[in-house]
Amino acid sequence: MKNIAVYPGTFDPITYGHLDIIKRAINLFDKVIIAVAKNPAKETLFTWQERVNLVKKAVEDIERVEVEPFSGLVVDYLKKKKAKIIIRGLRMISDFEYEFQMALTNRKISSSVETIFMMPNEAYSYLSSKLIKEAGALGADLSSFVPSFVEQALRKKTLGKCNG
Ligand code: ADP
Image (cartoon, rainbow, N blue to C red; front, side):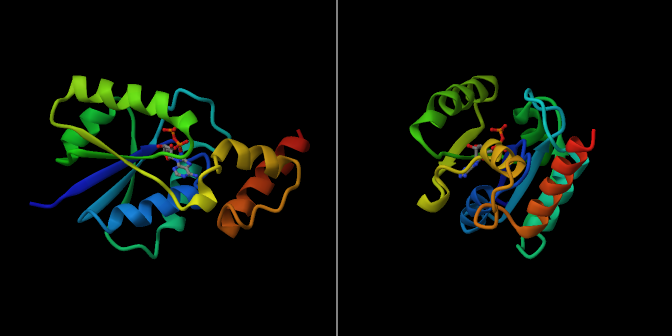
């Protein structure tokens, strides 16, 4: 039986922090499915399709990784995929409370599901999609944080916004 893990998230947009977690996860599992939330609780800068496309491009050279949309409960999505593991990234202590609540809630809803937390390389432990969007809008060089095509997509979005 294949050991499949699901890495769910908003990925608005994907950063080197997410990619670091994906590369660590693929060393542990037969397959990693990156599940891009179609209707996340938070408002997104990129549309769902744009977020999916950016993730797909970012992982195109990594074997055994799939990118898929998902909506609804993560645990239902896992069942559909015959997966039992949720991967989440843990950066600072500030991530802990929310992630802890979510992991225990998911376990309560479905006892067969386990959440595994992975820590990124310390170089990315402060990196967030939110910060990237803010810094990008102010014209910062994002080359250490995101692949160049993500930076270009961000620039395009910001320009689009400036032009109305
Ligand atoms: P969500 O809205 O589900 O939190 P995100 O795309 O913001 O979606 O994050 C998805 C997962 O990736 C979360 O577990 C988050 O903690 C983790 N993550 C985000 N940025 C990083 C990073 N720089 N390093 C490690 N994990 C990260």
